Length: 327
Image 1 (tube, rainbow, N blue to C red):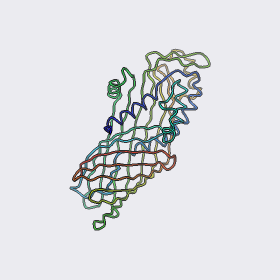
Image 2 (cartoon, rainbow, N blue to C red):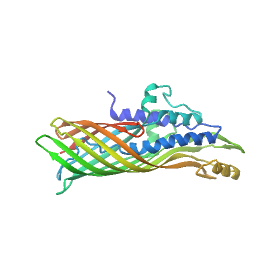
Image 3 (tube, rainbow, N blue to C red):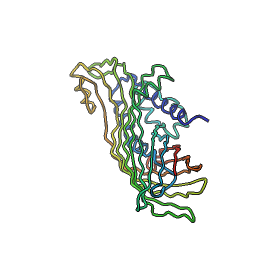
Image 4 (spheres, rainbow, N blue to C red):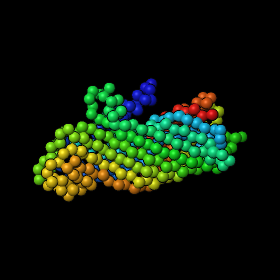
């Protein structure tokens, strides 16, 4: 069996390679295709931000009860939409003919370090999660496996929740809680860009430039969870409804020396264009509904969590594995 860290790295490498920035003759077609992908990201990115803190216990108890650990996971975005956009940049998504990926979508990874502590007097617990990966670190890591890849990943996930225990039975172990969670996710894929983009009034040569695919979301979620904390195993089910404020798009950084080209890029709908490059960033606010569940294997004070998630409104899937110390 592959180690979780290696597995998530392979998934990450596939996603980075999919973003290879290559020449396209028609920036208007790129914008149309980008709109489709960005709209899908509007639901997929908030879904991705809910990875982490999906612990099997619906409520861990009051102080001195606490836990600390980490989790890794993936959620999916529409495979066909992403493939159509990237084909306009002259590249094919890896495994583009795979029925498996067409069925489940393109995997987007995430990881968190996380902790949870019980409340005082009131039956609540509070959780926090954090994950970060800087472009320079990810580029150095990827270059160890694919020489001089030129790719970098910017990733930041911060979140937390407060849960209130409605039921905490011990005779027949049953716990039911409701909670409020807030998640902020920022990400981006960057790569060297040394191509020429053709416009109606001429062409723009980019040398020693950079292209980035960017996204961010602020997600507010109401959720409920039930769990059955038996001695060796704790199965659980939950659901969450959220509202998110998101942005996604792409950015090309490089010299544009002709003012007419800058004006034409703005006319074509780019959200910004200047002598330093251009970008197309779109805001997407959305409601999201997810179901999640799974089980943990309880080994004394160690918990191994296995979680599956489903985005009810757009059919995306998610899965994660976590390990934690919990007293």
